[in-house]
Length: 83
Image (cartoon, rainbow, N blue to C red; front, side, top):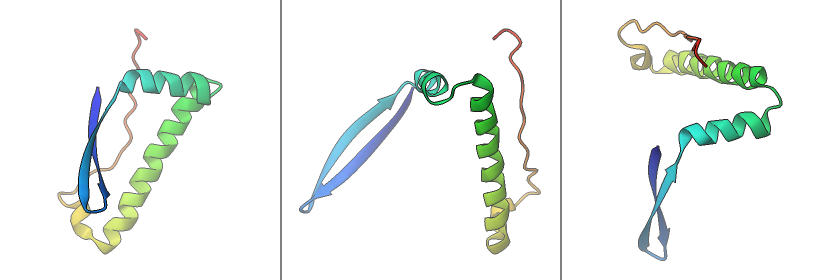
């Protein structure tokens, strides 16, 4: 379960709001309601991961510390044969 706290300011005062999400249930809803096919959902996740790596490479040009330690950027897919 993922948890987050949000704070909103209203006329100089601060309010805290708790937020909880069932990540597994949220992903299941996304797969079944937004995407018509499980393969489409998987392709979208891989595409998003590739975009994130491209963005990191691009930003590392201006800020080399982002890629410190000879970090190898890769997308690793490990199938769950029991699923």
